[in-house]
Image (cartoon, rainbow, N blue to C red):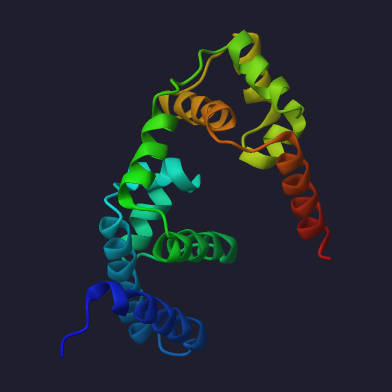
Amino acid sequence: MRLQIAKILPLAFVDTLRRICAETNDPEHLSTLYLRFGSILKQIREKRGLTIPGLSVLSGVPEELLGASESGRFEMTDKEFTDLRNVYWTLETDQASAADHKRIVDQRLSNPYPDFGFSMTQIREEKQISIKELSTISGLPEAVLEAAESGTVEMTDEDSRDVKKVYWSLSALEATPADYRRLLAGMATQASGD
């Protein structure tokens, strides 16, 4: 009797993750486990009919990190690894259909990237967070965010894309001001080592 891939993936995900966490002394074996884990992550995503950009929109995890994980390149922080594990496990165990995921991605992508200046300020103020708080959440310098909101932008294309993506995420994702308060509180607790 052959098991369906849908029934094997959760088991393979958990087993490979357990092996990765337990493996510390054999880099060659760990490299093989990372490749296997990346293949499992890709199967999970493809089973839901999502592209890497679509999963990035759905989860908020950068495309580069998703792509690296699926190719088996796992040089990342513990937090990034935890985020990946949570995103793919949620995707694997979620009861929503591929059509549901596609609808959510399409809704979010229909919201265009904001222009620099006033519209960015409106988006941030709607979520009731300061530029300093947005800098903490996004990792972008306060000065860059201030320049974007004032419309005095002199930055590379990559920086410009990153800034627009931050404000787009604020407007497109359904987090409330209370969600951002909790996120900031959690980040402050983690930074203080509690």
